[in-house]
Image 1 (cartoon, one colour):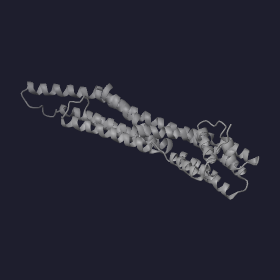
Image 2 (cartoon, helix red, strand yellow; image 1 turned 120 degrees about the vertical axis):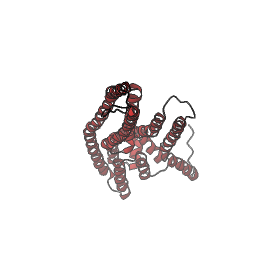
Image 3 (spheres, one colour; image 1 turned 60 degrees about the horizontal axis):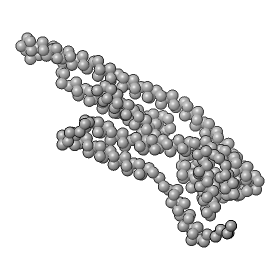
Image 4 (cartoon, one colour; image 1 turned 45 degrees about the horizontal axis):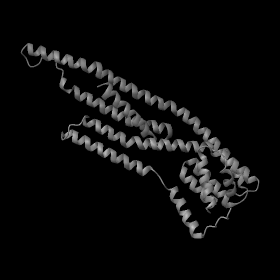
Length: 311
């Protein structure tokens, strides 16, 4: 087997730039831009339908609802998926730090310990460790590789852990003891977050129950109360015509505003879906983008309930 050719300084610099460029890649702008584009098309369809330029199968308000869903849905689910991935990475972070600390006690440097640990299995954390090991093998200092890892994951826990490890490595001394301490602290923090998440999940469930009770109330009003009022208004009008008067004094039911009442019900569900969804996200994770996922689910449920089931 022929010996591998050593990389020149220029080749190593170009490789390092490619690595740093991939670290900054993010799909957020692509998803937001695509969502805004789809929403603009849907809003345009709603305007065309409203002014009567085209005979479209949906009402103008339906196109607006779909536009709002197109804006909040993809980004909300993308952020939720990213948060789930980060949470799975954080769950295995204490194990990785413990193994690196054990390698350090055998006399390995931090860089060598990370490279050795990259051969292990840490679930979702494994690709990130392999990235750090590859960067170190390409000539990136261990502290810089850890900093890039913290920027990729970008959570308070990882940022704090990375900052402590980098300072300990730069200062010298026994990094293994620092890694053991950080591993223990990370495990305690994760357990605390899990306990809080279980508690907050109950409040999120309460928000969903309240929203669906609100929808059920509106469906009852639309299916039972408003038709009876329309029937009573028609009977009163017929009785007034039979007596030869415009309306019976003291008895007046404005049947023509019933469609407006139904439209107000739809708007109220729209407002509740967005507001309650954002509230659920703040309660669950303290994040409005994650609340967009809940808003999308509630908005879709409200649309199906009122426009399809409720007619």
